[in-house]
Image (cartoon, each protein chain N blue to C red):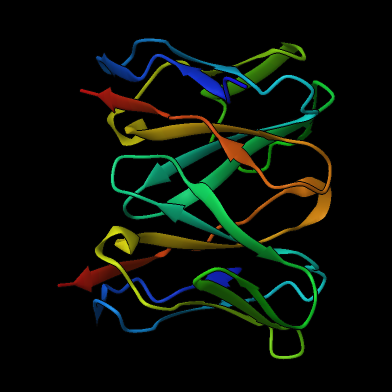
Length: 110
Length: 112
């Protein structure tokens, strides 16, 4: 089993819809979880992080964490074409180390 | 804040040559990470440092790869000799303890 699993996509959603991106992880010791966005040809940039079970909202983005199920998700409301990118999930391990999933490619269509 | 600075942005070299990638972390950050990204394997951690000391190099693919951090403001990743399968984008990132990683713009390496 991979440490971090994400559906590679592409996930296509119409503009204005909700995009749901999912991630499962294997390390039960992980306490912090990060979502990064990566545009084609660019470096990853942090969108959100979550430490506690439940939901965390920031503007159009909501991160959801369920440690018992080892599952973390990212919801993007009112999706815009500018949200089209690859989204990387990363649980934090020892020593600030982040293990990234292969990412889900999101396409927001006009 | 200038962010994490990597050089060069692009590197094209022939198989067998030595390649050196450079990174300047954000001032004050005490963690530094080297990642490699390919389409097939995604973003893989190669090695990371804490206070200039290598902590985990288990991701370094083989002895051809080496990394150093002689001081808090500079790190290098060296590949000697380089091979075509080393072609990838190499990212450097830095952070404070228990804080998110900040990535540099990456170095795109092509080995022919």
